[in-house]
Image (cartoon, rainbow, N blue to C red; front, side, top):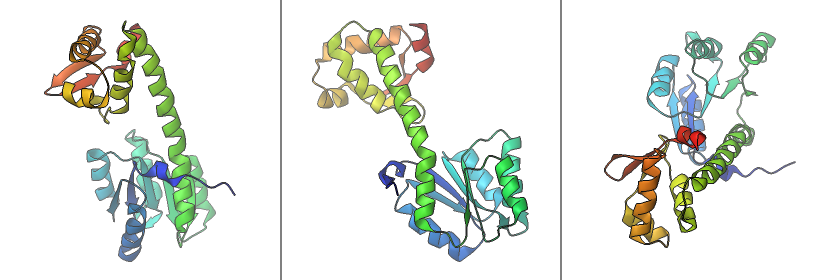
Length: 220
């Protein structure tokens, strides 16, 4: 059996939908040791609020909820154009649910009682392609951005910038912060930021905050 590196899931957020209080708390507490955040809710209404206000990478939802159905919740998400990888849990093996899950392209279907290792492995297998895609995109952006500058000494700064972009594709850092991590003079650093700004690749949007415009790289 292939052993998975579960450390890769610790920067991802999970939305967990379960109407059983005891199971909700137990699974939330277990998952909290492995992922960044677990948003644990008991109804689809609460789940929708989380989806619209928080960054959610994976949904784990029970199928049979109190007065509602997890399948119907996923259909509602699809109708609203919300696409989040989903794992369904259920104490039932009814073929109808399984067929509905397949139609909705659910990533996995776990029978209760939930096996933590199976759940963690499933989460790992979902996020691994996302991480690989992000890494490929980052490397491509590094190459494109480097081609947009003229001074080879600035390459380390480009890597610094791309490694520290937040979820909004923003860099939050001062010149001092960068110089503490990268061996570069302030005039050279200022020159780089000015050059990237002129090309609209890295534009200052607030104090110590710079927006990285990936689309501008395609114009290079």
